[in-house]
Image 1 (cartoon, one colour):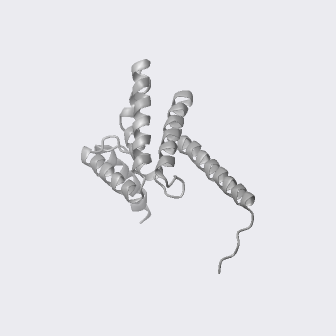
Image 2 (cartoon, rainbow, N blue to C red; image 1 turned 135 degrees about the vertical axis):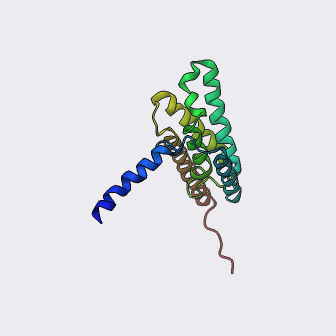
Image 3 (cartoon, helix red, strand yellow; image 1 turned 45 degrees about the vertical axis):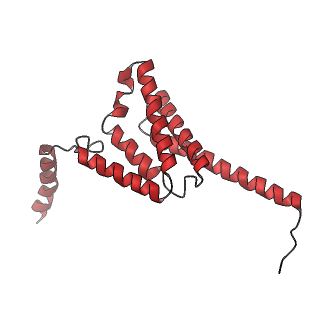
Length: 171
């Protein structure tokens, strides 16, 4: 029995070596139909949680910044952004991580700012550090901004209530 268990992982690895899929990097040879399913499912979820403006602003600015960089400097430096697995990663990120309700703004104007901040900071981190975590670092910057915005809004509301004085109780 133990020899079968020892052979199973190698058999699985041998099978995956012969397939057209890669175990590394978000399946770079995935069929185009899978990307369509990812895109349609992502749009459906973004619509259901009311985050479509956030997704559109993020993806628009993200790809615009990298496109401008490819025209302004060596396109080879940013070409990977437009190919698998980075393309798959950014679509998954935009549809499923950015739209996470507890960490992204509810109101549309705030979503637009949040998407802008995440796209610009992700781009800057990629350009400055070339780090693999540039998308997650970008959403971290956006979440810090969102926390700061909520805290300052809470302080303003509290200060306004303090200026107005105690409210009479209505029964």
